[in-house]
Amino acid sequence: MKVYIFLFFLLSLTLINSYSESTTIYVDVLNFTDIISIQVPSEINLSTVTKNNPVSDDIKITINNTGNIAVTITPELKSPDEIFENLVLQERKSGNLSTEYLIGNFSLDIDSPGTSGLEDEYFYMWLDLTDYTNKTQNLLDHSAEIVFYAVSQ
Image (tube, rainbow, N blue to C red; front, side, top):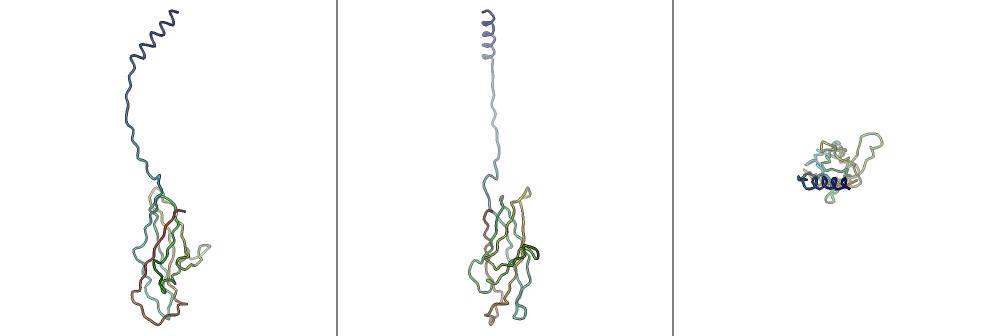
């Protein structure tokens, strides 16, 4: 019995002499939300097409994925345009990604950026007026706006 009383006494002293402190912990929690963001060229110049040369040079178009998820890009004309409805897009010049598409029917996948915060992908674009039938008028500096829609994959 004396042993139990002694142990109780020691335990009581330990509890009475206890002490504690606290600290505040901080963390920045980032990239838990999906961010879709892309960079596209500010303008694309296809130069000149003529009756005898109705196909423009092909232009390499690079799009940067600056968000944090993989995206699918679909370029479309903002408004109907009988000239630029003949834009042809192609992911690669050869191989199984070389199918040619008219604008509005083409999509391009871009992976999510790595640690650099940037992932880019490219495709080719040109104007083909070979089958265009209303070639009676000259159009100088004819332009249209392309909207690049980006959605998560």
